[in-house]
Length: 472
Ligand code: FAD
Image 1 (spheres, rainbow, N blue to C red):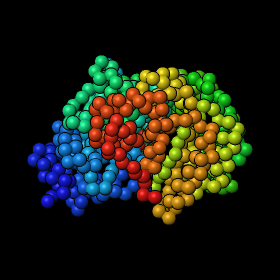
Image 2 (cartoon, protein in one colour):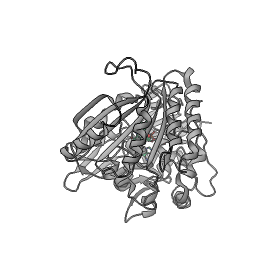
Image 3 (cartoon, protein in one colour):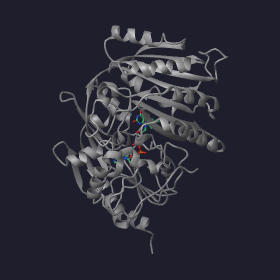
Image 4 (tube, rainbow, N blue to C red):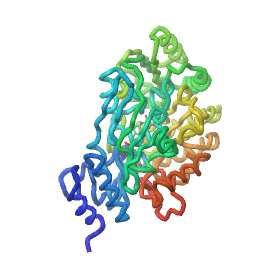
């Protein structure tokens, strides 16, 4: 008897316009890898869809066969959800077209777009869509989980800037979700992740912007807690045009830094100002007068340069592990613990990323989107980044133990896109007061939990659940 995956292949071959890749075929090895090298799986079939009809065919065949199915846009799921062993991968990488309506300040982006696909198209007419900070990240996974980035204080999260979704649901139908059509689904898709179907098109709100001011510096020793405290107190009243990000790291081995500092614990800060240059200069100079930052730089750069400047720092295929949380404020104890943890960082690229939300993102009400409550503005992401499998245990254990120490001071809740694949127990925590409403929407659109390779919201009476994690 043929295996179900072979039956799906046989059936899809008759009508599929995209490509169907199986083990041993050209392109399969490259297509089966995802961004996080910790997650190595071998799918039974990768269906690279060319259009919406291909997505419908793939969903219908896989749902009928009951085969485990992953959905992939940019393949950047930190948790590794966009691949699977033996099952089907619905790969949207051929669906990356973007059309821009300059006058209406709207873009239509296909479900496989990378952030760079959207930035390149919208910048042609001087417009931007608020999204993440690395251009090779997939737009679909990022938007559906929420979407934080440089512009979130000025214009809100990515999900706050979506006007409508078109998706293929678990029964293969094409459904629209916006303020008028299926408003509950529209609400759920803005933060609820990939639980409800395969989004084939996003209708995105755009804003005018072409360039900005960027400053950066690096602080060491006693300046680390000093700047952290200042940042904590300063950001609550900062203007929306200001974004000040901090990473606690080991200083890079760079000639721009004195030899005595290289490889030592450091606070790296990037400050962006969107708006009037004179006003911005005052803010940027003021921030860089706190402590004694080294390697100071001030630049006016294009939006595309901002969006791509971190691309090389997070390449595909390295090993990554993360844990994240929100803080209402940063207590002295939390700051001390963060600083102390730098002394045991196991890899030169492992870091603590800190961002302050607030601004336009912070003003969206807790019930307006499934992303929910934004009242704890400090977002912390412990990101381990290393190369050799022999260093897995040290990096994973550093993240886990640092998280455990800081956890009591965090506000319950977590951003689903900064979770790993071994945090199933935190999904309910992520959605807390929105959980029952999300379960109701999920039960309506995906009663059998076909879309379950995600930070999963199981429908009522679900039999199918998947517990997975990186290959630890
Ligand atoms: P994929 O791995 O392709 O998909 C992840 C999940 O999203 C899938 O399992 C599926 O459930 C769902 N999905 C994907 N495509 C679709 C679709 N078309 N329809 C329905 N469901 C779909 N997050 C931020 O908020 N801000 C950042 O600045 C940021 N920077 C990042 C930088 C890097 C280098 C990385 C690796 C991640 C970053 N993230 C950021 C986290 C990011 O939001 C998530 O990793 C997100 O899942 C990436 O989306 P993707 O489309 O590449 O994911």
